[in-house]
Amino acid sequence: MQGLGGTGAQQSKDCSFEAGTVAGAPLRVSWFLVIFFVYQLIDAMNNKSFPMWVRILMVTGNELLLLLTVLCHEMGHGTMARRCGGDIAEVLLWPFGGICFTTRPQGRNSRQKLVDDLWIVG
View 1 (tube, rainbow, N blue to C red):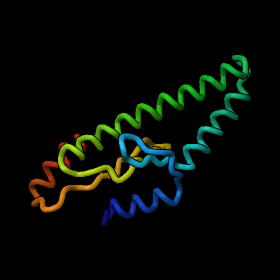
View 2: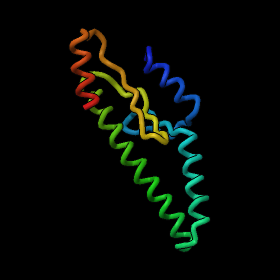
View 3: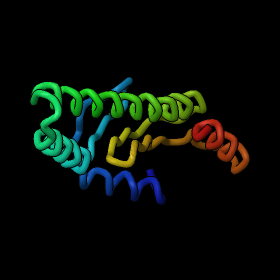
């Protein structure tokens, strides 16, 4: 991977950890997401409206639901990249959503690249 995407992929490795693979694609999770989750847990402990176990379960469930939704969305981009002849380099989950770093097939002209990008993004 080169250019702006390569720079972003390298920077994402500096502030994230490997969390396994999804459909053969490496999955990374940002440390900031972990910090945000811990903050939410601490905030839930200070809220006395429900029993402690309910508050922890609510925060954990909400976070899992959000991450699974974002992961499904990013895998949609990755699936389209694969259908266009590219591959998924990695998927990053971070506090602002997710990023699916993909590669393109070689030997495509500018018009074909643009059409592929529109299919992947759309």
